[in-house]
Length: 113
Length: 120
Image 1 (cartoon, chains in turn orange, red):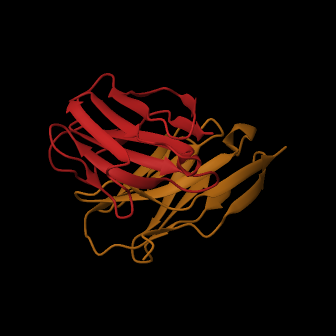
Image 2 (tube, each protein chain N blue to C red; image 1 turned 60 degrees about the vertical axis):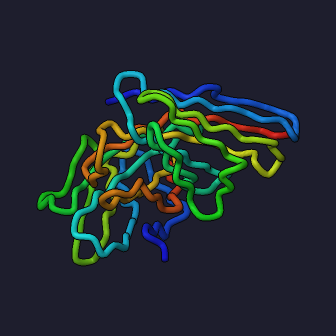
């Protein structure tokens, strides 16, 4: 079964607008971490934001915030004030205890001027 | 954050040759490193988990005799693609865990910049 599901293969957003990238996950563990990474065309994986399963507050990092809804097992990424440089692939990932990161299929975000 | 390097960044080789990719943690010791493979327009798929001083653990469907992993020191893991074929052409990314011991959900994996392998 898919551990991480990203249902949006591609998204478009107008520059300066906000965009939400969806991510749902599947785990029976109580302790786990959720991550978002950005992958530009160069291929490098850029860490954006982390949410721990026990964290009560939604994580925020600059223009990135994570909308964590534990009961629904969703961890959507919100990017505010989109910039042209935000155009890239975005991967949601999860790590359970004693396991490596597992990635979703990704969402390609295109920011339009 | 911690820095992980990979070498080479790009390699083109003939079918049947072997290619070695190095992954180094530059400013921390990594007892555990991971190797991922990414085909075009797809996600990262875990190939194997490499632990310093012991044999690597391979994911289902990954041929351990074809993808040789050596983690001989706390800062270096190598992936050797033996007798490479065109279907092995892919983007290979390594990742290192900064802390040693038990993997917790709070540890952060640091990624190398990747190696693009093209087999002719």
